[in-house]
Length: 280
Image (cartoon, rainbow, N blue to C red; front, side, top):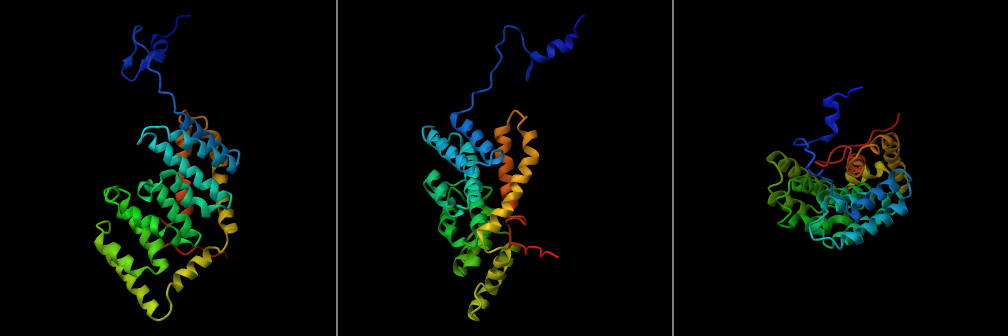
């Protein structure tokens, strides 16, 4: 039987058209050791639910990355932090998240925006926004970060999830007045919220409404971790499909990041957190 010429030539086609027999086939670059460890850590986290081993694997990968040139493997570094954050949260060690990521990046100003966002959302959800106050302030004040596209979202997040709940009204005013990240409408909304909070302080009611909101969301780590079960259920239903794709490492990291953001911040980062629905 004669084969179809188009069919027989198909495997030899590259991005630039059919390959001649004399042309070498370009092989994809081999992944780094840290990238392979990231894939292992994601497997341990979402498939085997071995959170301790996932965290150890992330830390091994960080040791390998220490030997890489500065600026290399930035996406791998960020993805390792995302996996590590969830591993710590699953083990009810969320208090260690900030110190863990700072060990990886040394200084707050170097934290990737998405990693810092997750830290703010996590500590805000656990009613400990003061833990990230200095870190976020340092990041926002760094001139190199102020030109990043994520700067506006982090400035809004810092205002609504950290400064206002803590009653840091002077700092909130300085942020709103001195930053170009806020639109005129956002600036007016923020100043109105600050004015309301200041009136509450004068009447001895500082932070009462915000405290009631946070109390309704759950007063224990147990409730937080039970909600994280949603992540595992989503992964269980999707993991068999995504592991068949060629770039499963990137997909795992990206999906995990999206799920974490949705889990920690279902209403979006801009503005106060929405009241949770009450069961009927």
